[in-house]
Image (cartoon, rainbow, N blue to C red):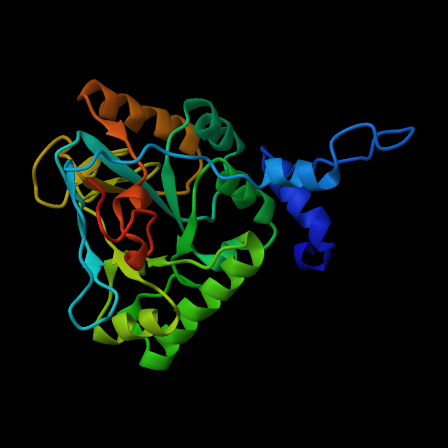
Length: 280
């Protein structure tokens, strides 16, 4: 079981494992300490990818909710031709996808359903080290509105606890399964340390069929077509994700857009990386 492995072995294996299911080994060089130290190797393994930040004046920073609760964000207001690729769940593992994200240097954001970590922790370690933060998508993917307030709190807090223990950072952003939430959800999210709730403006039905009956279909929530600046795009970890990802990257680039890191467009007070007061 993954949880019974020594911590150092788990970190090294997860950090270096590009392909799911492969557990590489870091060995000390024969004949003495003539190579990089274990500490320096781990530092390289665990270093985060750095994504471009928006230019001052090109976007409108989302604001905290006046009641102090995590705000529900549905779009990023920006003049840049950027879109944000977010991927949910985690029940399918496509090793080629990790290589693609590394090669293309594409920012993504993972909303991880924590029960899928079991047995595949190294896959998400590899994605984490390719630049994807691991954010909260509950433990069991149950619609929040079907749960009691305490049930919602447990789903969110337990998922954050698992992700923190496994990947070394506590989730700051929450995405409710199916986009289903109520006031109790927002209260529970705050109790679990969540700073914002992120929904989406469009969905790529990768590896499945849309409500229109089309496979690998792209649909906007506003009924329009194509991409718009600041779109938050929902995808899922499904079989064949690498090819599906190539597909949407092609569409994005053909329309003159590029993927950007949504966390760089969120202030720190909402779980992102941007300063709370914009610099000019």
